[in-house]
Image (cartoon, rainbow, N blue to C red):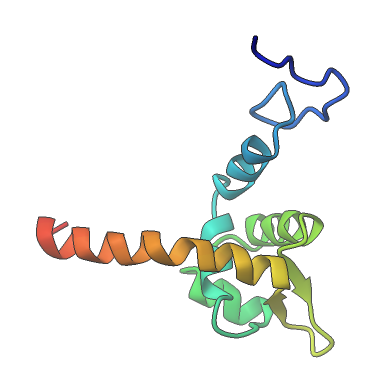
Length: 112
């Protein structure tokens, strides 16, 4: 018999169940979220440098995503004022690397 979802589960955008995978996919699916994480994968960046790396994304949208990513525990504001990945943010980016390698192979094969 299928296990019923906990009725006390926290509701998240895009999910009535509050399942963690749904919450994560919703956050990562928001405009600029993945790009911000990707640009921070190698080094911390100031707000201005991050905006430049993100093809001049709207400052309002960029700040909204940074706030969401900070609240989720993936990004932190460093002492020098730059944004950096937390340990969880680095772990998340590491999970993207096999997909990144696949995408590179796919692009070279398909000419995309």
